[in-house]
Image 1 (cartoon, rainbow, N blue to C red):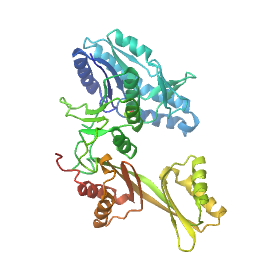
Image 2: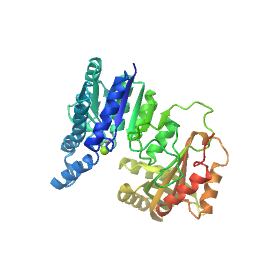
Image 3: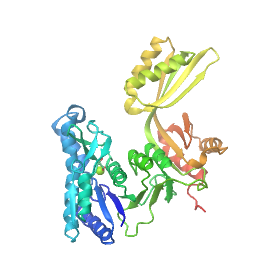
Length: 412
Ligand code: ASP
Ligand code: MG
């Protein structure tokens, strides 16, 4: 008898009829003999509505009342879990719902963005032993100071995988409104294909680069504790195969690339005429880090006149702070000027098969140049390459790259 953790997203429990459907599926799996822990998100737009409600009461609730905001937001998942428990019990299957705090999901104390430190899940184990389906509220926990916390938007995936790891579950099935992870966002790239199997690290890259399908931290936990994760559609009766995220064996990758993800809202800052030497670069990066600004791409070039040019990219929401810091630094170091280029999109090309394969850069540049798309910055890791292009060309760049690497074609 396998223990399986299932997670249902907000659209999957978005209406009473959909909750009934989920209850059917859960009852079926339970009758098949599996032990089940079911993690739920809040129904449809509930979390957005609760946030909007808070904003009508008080400006900037996240900054000024983080504790109370967490109290409020956790209510969304409570609604969904209680309704689902009722629906399952109506099918003569024993079920009980638990809040994150009852399930003893212990987090740090960072309200609205807490991280899980430990999953005790004592009560969950007890209820499983009684033969019950245990429904756990996603996206929430409790700190050691006994404060209720939330894990950040989309955090229910993380709850599910963390529970699966703690309970030693066979796998974690994430039911959502799409039937798997695709080679690119199918709304933007019509020829995108479902990826049947993907490596944890590749999935972490895709998720942190803008693929909406999974919370990146959930995948990181899966990788660390070797919990296979399946992404499946809750709207299909056959599960369609979905996508299995697991450890890829060597020799399995045929293609250089596995998939593409993208995200707009990036900015390039160019600091011109800095003194040569590592000192200036280190100083910029230190000041940005001290201010909590995270830098994506860093590139430097020495000019013929003995001065250095430093280029960094940041997210748009950090622009005001980054700009102020860079301007002050240029003044302090008697540099020349700062140039700011907003409105960029970052496209990530992800694939563990890319490593050590010659010609990938050439292929990227040839494809983009042929389409007249300029690359403003570039970075690479062992399994990904990211290029920054004008945000208006984002969709086109995705299509061009998807085609150039044959991602839309049938795989052998
Ligand atoms: N309900 C929360 C949100 O909308 C958590 C989740 O759905 O995973 O962000
Ligand atoms: Mg939600």
